[in-house]
Length: 154
Image (cartoon, rainbow, N blue to C red; front, side, top):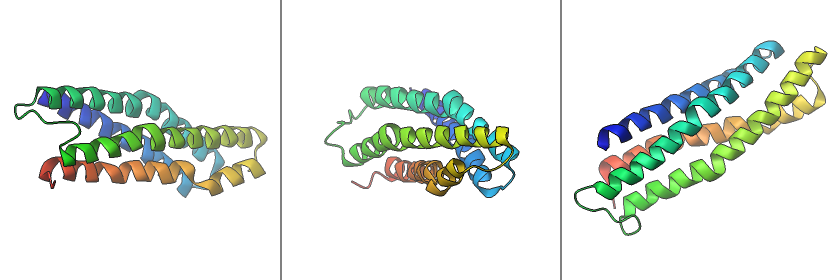
């Protein structure tokens, strides 16, 4: 079970990288065609890599902890509870907010690309920075969860 969970973690991390890197690149460029292409890529990678990787990590993690020799308690083990809370925040709050912001910006970027100029809606959506902020929060939460799982501080 440990091997499956490790593979699921790599899958999730590949998804995080495949989503956040195009988002960061899209915000760094001024070329509308490149920005629209990068945002399409980020949205496709979210559906193909990040969401399935997070689900696989969730299910293999629960199975691994349930079958672990010492018999970890999901609620009384402090470090495990902290990892569960962070993962729940990532999966139920940050990931959907990033996805909604990403779809919104991608839609406005495609509309602006069709018109050939940046629209006011796209300017406003890019000023929100929702996908960048929540994608970065998800990215930064992963080392925290890894630290908690490795060092088990409480």
